[in-house]
Every structure is written in C-alpha cells, then in structure tokens.
Amino acid sequence: MLDTAIIGGGLCGLALARSLKKAGRSLTLFEARARLGGRILSAVPATTGEALDLGPTWFWPDTQPLITAFVSELGLTSFAQHDEGAVLHLTEADKGPQGFEQQVHGGARRVAGGMARLVAALADGLGEEDIRLGHVLQKVEDKGDHVVLTFRVDDAFLTVEARHVVIALPPRLVAETVRFSPDIDAATRDAMGAAPTWMAAQAKVVMAYSSPFWREAGQSGNAFVTHEQAVVGEIFDACDATGAKAALGGFLSFPPDLREAFVVGLPMLMDSQLVQVFGSAAEGAEQHYQDWALEPFTCSARDRAEPQGEHVAFSNPLLRRPLWDGRLYLGGSETATQGAGYLEGALEAARRIDRSLARARSEEDEVALPEGLSVNAASLARFATWVATLNDAAFEAYRVRLNRALAAQDREQLTQRAMLGAIEDIYERAADMLDTLPFDMVGVPVEKGRSALMSDVQLPFRDFIQTLLDDIIAFNRTSCALSNFPGEHHLSKDYVQTILRDVAAAWRDFCLAANRRLLAKAEAGLAEAGAALPLGAGPRKGPILTSAS
Image (cartoon, rainbow, N blue to C red; front, side, top):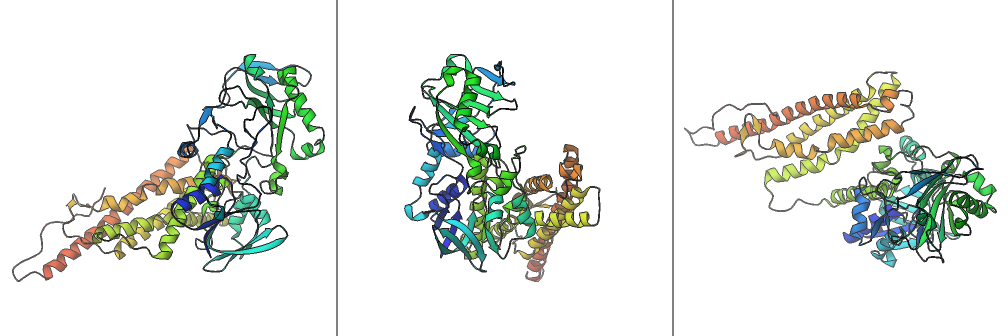
C-alpha cells in the first residue's frame, strides 16, 4: 500500500512530490497526460530554437515570494520581461494602431529556457518508479483506514490503495469527472464547482521571427486590440533574455466556440492580426498555438461554458480542509489562500498539504516528544501542537453559526457575531485544554500577577486570528448565500476593524482565564508542597494576583 498518492503532475503535485521525496517519504505521482507539467507547456520553434511558453509565462517577485525563491532554489535563471518602448492600441478594424508609453507587466520575470525548465528540474528529483503517466482518475473510495483509487489506463482499469491521497487538479474538473464514495459533503462539492480554473478556456499563440523588428522600431511588443473583430486581443514581447531570439506572444479574443468554428482559417487570421498591428514585418511567422479549452485534463465543461470573469487570487477555504479524517486532500493552484490560479498558488497549496501530511503522520505514528524535555516544555509543546489543529475547527464553527443566522433570517452583523462566537468557543476549549496538562509550577516566576508561562501559551496563537480572518473573507466573497448581503459579501475595512476589536476583547478574556488556571496550578502545587513539609515549616507566603496582560 502506498503512503501517499498524488494525482496530478502539475506544479503543485510535482512540488509536493519533491518535498516528500526529500523527507524520505514513499509516494507515487499519477498523471493523466503523457507528459508532466499540467498547464505549464513550452514549445521550441525551429526559427529560434528558444522555448516559448504556451501556458504560464511570468512570475512577480514583489508579490510572489514562493515561486521567486523556488526558481532560485532549483538553480534556474530568470530575466525581466521586456517592457520598454511604445505600447500599441488598435481600436478600429480598418485603421492603424495608436502608440503610447506605459509599463504593462509590473516587474514580471520569466524563466530562461521557458517554464518547462521548472517542470524538468522537479522531475529530475524524482525516480522513474515515482511517476505514472497516462493514469486517468475515475473514482476515489474511503475504506476507513485507507483510500482506494480507480484509474483508467488505456482501455483497462487499475486500482491502487493509499493511506493518503492528494488530488492536485483543478477542483471544478474533479467535481465533474471523479466519483467519490461516500460522496464528499455538499458544501465542499459546491465550493469545488464554483472555483473557476484560471485560463482554462483561453487560447494562446506564440510567433517566432528572425529578428525583433518591433524593438528596432522603438516598440515594446505590447499591444491591445479592442475592436469587435479582434482575434488576438493582448500581445507581448516573447523574446529570450538577449532579445536576439525573437518572438511575440498573444492571448486570443475569440471564445472557445468561435475558435472551433474558425479552426481551419485561424492561423491566417492570427497572422493577419499581427500584420495589422505591427506592419508587414510581422507576416509569415512560425506559429505555435495552444487552445486550453480543448484540454480535457485542464478545462471542465463549466469552465468552457462560462465567460472568464475577473481573476480572484484566493479560494474558498472549504477547498483547503482535509477530508475523510485526513486521508484525502484537495490541491492545485485554485485551492490556494493567495495567488490562486498562478504558479505561486500551486506552491502555496503544496506547502499547505505537506504540513498537513506531516501532522497526520505524527498523529498516526504517535510520535513521542524528544527525550529530555521538562514537564512544562513537554506540556507546552503538546499545547502548541493542539492549537495548530484549531483553524479548521474555528472556521467550521464560524460556518455553522453563519448558516444558523441565515436560516433565522438575521441580517445584521452576520460575520461579526459568527466569528466572535466561534473564537470564544475555541478560546474556552483552549483554556480547558491547559487544565488537562501537567505543569511543574515550582520556580515558575509570577510577576505582577502574570505567570511566566503565559508567553509560551500565547505563542501558538500568533497567526491564528489572521488565518481565520483570511479564510472568512475568502469564504464570504465566494459564498452565493451572502451575495445578497453586500456588507457581508465584501467586508469593508471599517467592518473588519470592528470585528478585530471584538476579537481583541475575547483574546484578553482568554489570556486572563489561562493565566488564572496557571496560577491555580501554582497555588495547588504550593499547598501540596506545604502538606509535605515537616512540622513547623509552611508554604511560601504572599499574594497571588490574577491579572494577565
């Protein structure tokens, strides 16, 4: 039986597989295609021999630290997207373009040799025995202590057993094509179906040239075509780092059905569009074209049918919850907290699942704490581990309270009351948890009524509120039920500040309660020590205060 089965050989699945491999964990990665990479795809034109990206092209160091660090860690070279020169704008089909000066790509960088270099570097860290291509996931069954996967391989079916399964695929595609037994809960299934697969219904073309004639004319290569007959709507410079290996890239304006209708004449139409924008020098390019809407392992029927809306760089937090008691995880870029749909989001999802798998293995293996820890250090470590599991519980408590309020037709402060109630419940559980842990309070200082252990009790909660708030904001913005409550659907800064003031008060109450319980343990320890002293001796005297900051 496998320890971990990863479904999907895109960036999320490959990055997770690499991390597990480095940690010495057993895994197998299953990919439906005959290649790795998912939406990462590069073509090598005969004209230049330089790889051109037909999928993701850029990353942004200022806002995407994970992919930036990952490119460096893998030893890959990056270069700045060319953005210098005039931008062209074609607004009418029978007229020429207008030029203007503007930086378009906002500090974007590209990987030298194409994004496929990223895939190759990750694959090099895995063995042939770790990868299975041509395996199309059909069914996922929970067996209580493991999961059974059914794949279609050519014309046959194959079953695989695994303790943990990670489905690193677009959630909407999974919802349409994979059967679950028992079925996953309705809320999670709805969240999967509501998560658009970024760029899934888009098409991209790159055109290779013998020279970068647009640069020689003082143009950046950036262009926008916005008239009704536009074929390629957005164009950019796709040259290599030196600019010597020339290419232009573009995103098609035609929707999927129109691209199919004009499939025979599309190369001519794209060529004509480039000539209209850049002049006769753009004629006769070597074209490489990719229609992602025709990719059954990327684009769902719903993605194809719905027009692509504004990009939302976060996802519904229900997509990040472990399912089936930690045996099943949803991954892929569209499940990320930040950068959903981008390479950054794929890496964030991989990191999240990696941490969750590590916690699950620790619980299953009942990993003991390191020897030599004091009673207090061991108890505080167990408390920190327990707190690390609370965000999912807090979010679920929030969702339950919100649903109750909606069912009762409440309309005021829905988020505020549901979040505060969930947090108060968690803090009460945390204070009770402290009571169950053993502490040796002898010699633990108490200054101004505050136990010296309070700092260690508070530390595990450092990111708790922010993580929960991020999840709530993302959930509200993706919730159809809240779409009729604009103030709850999109939380204003003032509303968030009001919520945080309530949360701060709840945090103060928890700290006071936790401190009182630690001081009570200290007092009980002194009383016990006093009872054991020889006749005439007594416990240390002095007031024990009960305030905590």
